[in-house]
Image (cartoon, rainbow, N blue to C red; front, side, top):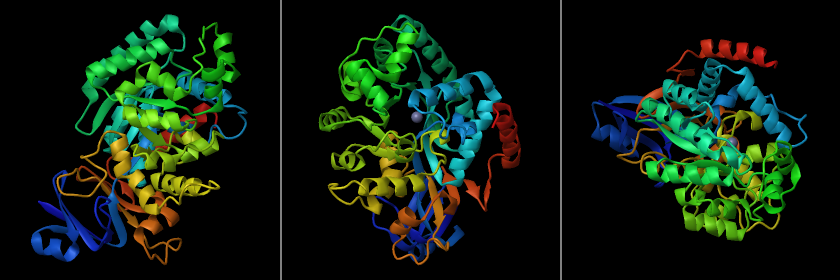
Length: 449
Ligand SMILES: [Zn+2]
């Protein structure tokens, strides 16, 4: 059976935009892309779905999320004066108060928000990966869930590594054609050098994707360069020995074999030209998270430079505790404005480049290039339809400019993953949204919000 999805615009990303276009879907794959007239002629028996005021584009890719922390939205706003305090509050709330079912509900609510915003694939870092994988699968999204590993104390590196192997072993049974497992040594300040090496070797042997937070804050730079600052103090207080490497984060990750895994690195704010060259040479990918970086006061990653050097860059929301929404169209607008706001910047980043990062670039960044991120025959049928008819969007002279400069995830009217409509007619079709909303309210009461 063929279904034709027709729209005012079809934006394949890998080829020119098509006015009055259509895509033909057969099963979980894109069978054809063209003008409406040509496809209606070619597939006369197809079921036709019309979106006359919308643009159909590849499903948006969220290159960095923490769906399990969705219940923390609005929890961490202004009272924490430093990143360390922020992380502490988050960690306590995460570990001590939430049951496995709370984490599942939190992740499923996050996945629901993503589906409503036209996001079809996520690279999700999770301490409770078991629940996050189930949540993504139940909502029907594509993704890689990276089981996080923590442990700054070198004396515990082998134990922590053994725990990670055990967890990853149990996750394997949950993998589906849509949802895969990866590993994530959390960050340079929470995982010691030896543990980074053990995890990297394991990932290379088992062919597992790796993601890590990198070069995110000044506190991280101070720890790695000088052995000072809030992270250094916290390690000292816990009696953990720290040998200051005197390196940037990127060179430190190279020394400890992480870059050999071609990791997906979230943030990459504190990077100089030598670091960017090292990233390019190693084949590392970047999740650019401009809103989270701004909200936490961490600064701005050199997005244009990454693109100029041909590095694979996707856009990430990070957790909604630091964002506060999981909305990649909004992230793309913010990324463009932030890049343009640099005085004396090299050039004006275009809406086309931002939309590329939100789709094909994101797919490349999370290792799904050739499966999703573009509209062309043979790829997975992952796409979204975004209304262009809102008062905040009209008049629209160019669909890509309207999408990036005047639209958000709230304008999405249809989300399809592997041929399945997961969001249509104002409803997520795969789960009971009302029940989830009620459970989220209960969790919020328990967490004291
Ligand atoms: Zn993160």
